[in-house]
Image 1: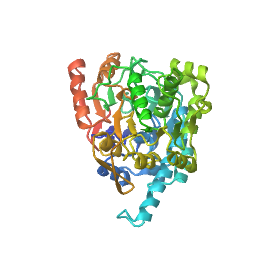
Image 2: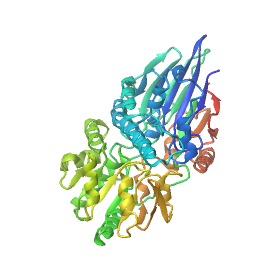
Image 3: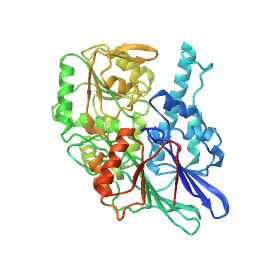
Image 4: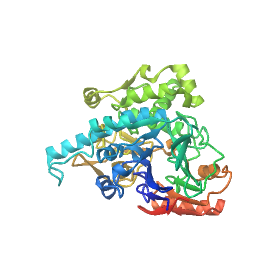
Length: 475
């Protein structure tokens, strides 16, 4: 029997991994992973990163990757380390982004292991990285580019094509057609779905909005991240400008934990617009991420995916790398100099959920001071430091120390690149026919359950919430 097994992002918003097992007309079964992401957040989830898959890595024939975010791609080096040597298919932009995201993830794994060994803060002696930067770099040789709408035949039993998901640069939904036992069911894995249309209530989007419409499939595997939340229907720019002005007026700095890919670029474009129109003072803006320069260069390479808004800004102001008073801090010394200055600044730094990276150093120094502002512009998964800070806690643990939270904490929800329930329903209404079955993944239990109920009520579809390691027939 051909089946799908949910090996991640089932009951949680992280660790996306979906195994497709296909009966191969008497030949050995074909086994393909759609996405291969890291578990992030709570300890019980992160511990899954160290567990073997129920299928040996060398028995997996290929990986099909929807996009570059680490919760969808970040376990690939571990899979390769365990013996996977097959092709990894992704869009060209996704491959470019993975070439910086995965080695950086390996570097952070090594840094964390070194820190735990130095402080003896781990029960494992010695503490080891999940994979190294070098191992992540080596796995890039397995990537194979596939353009949007290009039909790719893996074997006689499986073919696929990528269609636009409009989540981040290069992001795709994966249409898979199985051919087995005289049947040819079509599966659609959405990955993460972007906002349905360009809108003034979600300004600054770097890539154009709108996932591909008019889909048809027998089985749908769909994300549910925003299944129980609605995006605010207000323009965030006035509130953003007011938060920045009030912080700078009291002599504080603004610290923005941000994902290095997409979210940082979007926020920098917005800051540029606000400064050029006089809505916020011109203060130093630091993009403090080793990936920032490379990520901007990759974005400028893929202009075919830009929104008209982004094209107009670049035409007017040029490359972000050349904007006056915007600093891209590539080295550790440049990063340290930011914290040596008492002058107010805006610091945009990874990681977006405060799970690691340079933002930890900025927060250690600035969280105890009420003059400063910590501004969240992205989803904070339960169990992450970002979630703790955003939830109103009085302190947070960073590098083994309890750091008091006295700085102002604010969040703007309009920056999300995930479609919310009304937007998802709007997109689903464009389907040519209803899938026979729909499985919801990549959502907290409450979010997935609420989206399921909304879909059943509005569409009348057969919708279920996927369970971890559950197997379901694939046609």
